[in-house]
Length: 409
Image 1: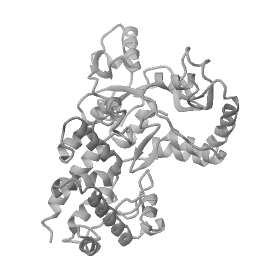
Image 2 (image 1 turned 90 degrees about the vertical axis):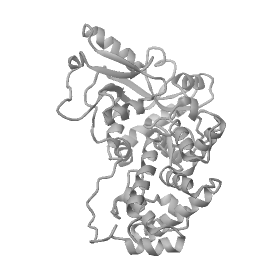
Image 3 (image 1 turned 180 degrees about the vertical axis):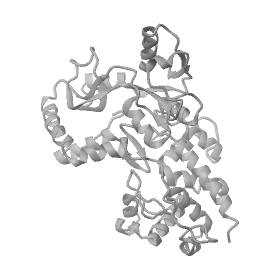
Image 4 (image 1 turned 180 degrees about the horizontal axis):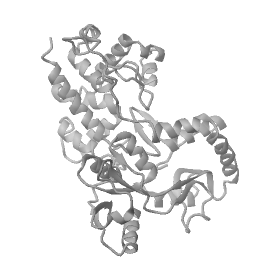
């Protein structure tokens, strides 16, 4: 596999991704052991197939004249295309000719730059093509469009569709390339595996599980829409009494628990995230089982808040090597949002590069680098690729809310 937000990644110590979950289900149903090798590029993926180091390439590799006969396809063919990513609103464009005299930012030496230059020639010139710095990824450019820092970029339609589930102000409806087929691949000597996958995937497409994965990754919003939970007059939340009781038991300021809950769920106990996290404190069923709590209890606000406090307390112990308790809170919050593995990776990177792993500003910097190959492929990194901007924003937002809540006794 290859790390990508549409294919394979880790979050809250869970392995996730559309291709990963589909591959995992195949192995479970066929009684196979799933052993994952990650590659850092398409060239490395194809080398692994060429030397028979892997049986299956569970990544949607575009079909080109060079590889379509060399590596047999397996499972389902996907149709991909490059699309324009722009902000919704009155200034949206709807035709490629409208790109003339507009700035479009793309990654250097990428298929997006190549396609845009070809399109520019087809139109007789006029598109202002801006090549992004090497330090920026596709995800970074899409985020910059959402933030209004740039007007347009180009991405594959699956990544663009997923991005609209994170950023509600994005549009990716306009295609700028011809459709291209892409598929999983198998080695040339694995005919049985190809046949089995072909038949199995045909069945999967026709059942609810496949549609569930499509919805989970490419349709369901990853941002939280508040249902305007009614908060009693003079209170921070509907659960102030529970926060006070639980906070006192676990030695955590009750306003801090409330700030975490506000950011997690806006105090809506009925909400379930796209990952399956539940309740006021948004706790995964697998996490509940780890703490010997029945997942069914997550729907009870008191049990949910109590378990959330236990997790925060455990992370505070886990990061006790961060001696400054004020600094440590940032590590605890980041781990609650993303899982501790990515935070440990960032600390290891900070140490390796001569920064201070006990300072959040230094660790934060390297956490933000974990979507870049030269960092997530570093030997000190154990949890691989991670897009950290939402975690950084989460830490800042909880701290800001806590500062506001602390005046409430």
